[in-house]
Structures are given as C-alpha cells and as structure tokens.
Length: 409
Image 1 (tube, rainbow, N blue to C red):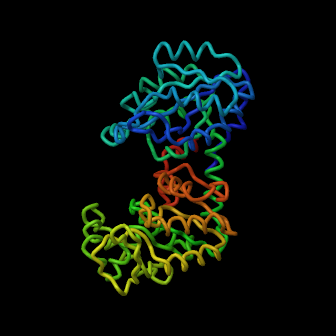
Image 2 (cartoon, rainbow, N blue to C red):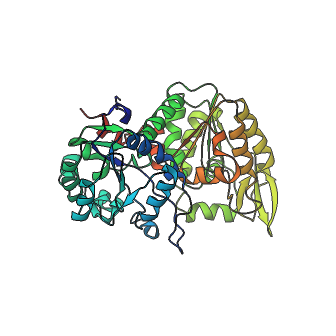
C-alpha cells in the first residue's frame, strides 16, 4: 500500500476534516468518560495540523447502536482535547447541518472545531452497515458527505481502531478530497508491519481472553505463514484448546463454554492442533476459586467442580520464560478473569513479563489494553494498538475498508 501522510499535505490556511477515533468507555450512570486513552492518542495529529495553520474540523463517533449507553454527545471530548492541546477546541451541537456548516466556514487559521457525534446519522451505525450495503460511491451521496465535503480542502483519517468499518465518514470523503493518513494511523501501520513483516525471532503470540473469535481468526494465518514460532494459549481460549485435546474440564467450565456459544471453536482448535501441535502451548494447570480462595490443579487432575478462572503457577512460569526469550511478543486477551481477586494472578504476571521483555512487545484490543493498564505501565510496551476488531482483521490478513479507501487511486 502507498498511503500518503498528513505531514505531506500543504494545510496552511486550508480547511482540513480530520476523522479520529476518540470513542471512550462511559460510566453508565454518570454518562462521563472513564478512560481517556484514545483521546490522548489523537492529539499529535490535531496539534500538528493546527500548528501548521490549518483550520481543523474533527469528526468523531461515540458509542453505537450495539452499546447504546455509550451513545452520547462529544462535548466532554472537546474539553479533554483542549486540556491536552493547550489551546481552545470549539464544539457544536451539530454535525453536517446549517449550524455546523456556519461554524466551519467561520474558522480562522489554527482554530479547532469538534463536531457532535457522527453516529446521530443512521448511515454511521453498525446496524446500518450490516443491513444496508452501500458502496463508497453511494456513501458519497449521503447527507453527511454531500454537506461537508464541499467545505474542505483535504481529508485526514487517523482512526485505525475503526478501520474495519465501512461507513461514510471512513471511506467516502477519499472519493472527493485529497486524503492522507494521520500520524497515529501511520504509526499503527508501521508498528504492525514491523511485527508481521519481519518479526525478530522467536516470535511468540500470547492469546487469551473470552472473545475467542479474535484468537482463532488470527491463529490460522500466523501459524500457517510462519509469522508465529509459538502460540501460548490462556483464558477461555486455552480452555477450549484443552477440550479439543480431550481434557474434561468439569461441568461448570464446560457449561460456561456452551452457554457462551463457544463450543463450535473446539473443532477449530482440533484442526489447529492437528496441523501445528508442536507450536501451540496449552495450559498445564488451572486455577479455581474455592469459596473465594485460589486453588490450583494440574490438568491431569481435572475435571473439577468449580469454574476455571485462571492459569496456574506452572503454566505462568512456562509462559514467562517463553516471553523472556522472545524476539517479538504479540499479546491479545487476558489470561483469566482478572477483575476477580485470586483470578488475576496469570494476567498480572504475564503482562509484567510482556512489559519487561527485552524483545519487541505489542498488544492490542480493548480488553487487552484495559487489563494491561491495570498491572503495568503501557510505556514499557513497545507498541500498543488502539484497534480491537481492526487489529484482529489486519493481523489475520483480512482487508480493511479504510486502508483500501486511502490506497485507492
């Protein structure tokens, strides 16, 4: 791909539309932002454009139909951006209507305006994308694009975390305006290219968590093409591999897998074990909470009548050693139910090992980053991706609509 950078654009005195991903976790009761990570990561591109005298207009989403309590205005985001930039960030309770257009046209050089939540438009919701398939050419005729595009001289996208979404704000402006990748998007792509293109060896992938679809979507590729020298399995993903290997975990854990509609992955795990067993590490022991106290059992001592909530000491030590010896370590998903006291040991120690690794370290995904932040300083990790779904699709070799749009001639 040949995607230009926002640094290559001549922006002085010009209006630049910047699509960022500052979608943040929201307290369901107060409706206030509880984690500023994505806001922090969006600042360099906005600052660079404003300092080069662009008239910066920020387009962003917050929440979706699938997480409705997060679907709130972006007014608080404007205040948080202003505090980090050290300069005013205007906000308007509109996106592409008359008031928004008036405020855009009134901007002076170096000024910044954040529009309201772009997902007030149906075409921007995930349910619309799923049920109504529009081409980028058709999206160029949506209310959002046809009202905003004529006001701008350039379009910059800095929203890697939303790169898997085919929505007008992500893929249609490129059809009408000179377009470029923001500094964060460029850094994400460079970091991933260094990991996946020519990783330092051995390359170790630590995959866990409850969202096992993420792990399975990438394992086939990274094992099949040799990107991964070893895959360490943990969390529910590790339990599914144990089931595929013929281990009876016990009624509570096996019911959990079935109740969460994950049993179908057992067959996928069998195929991966048949093809790549020597490179897939399975837990050798697990932890349960027995009346609130942590108890560990070797896999040979299973099944157990309590729910498996973490990997055990022997597994943790094996995985710590593999991470310490890795030239590259990529991690997605916590090792256990880290929110519960007693079930957090594996997650804490493995994130500590990743942060202390002498090789290149990379993590990504919402729950992955949130769990890592709880136990380590993210600055100790080489590369922290803002992406969840986009990251998984990229690592698994699937196309991303945003990158195709930016790369289009």
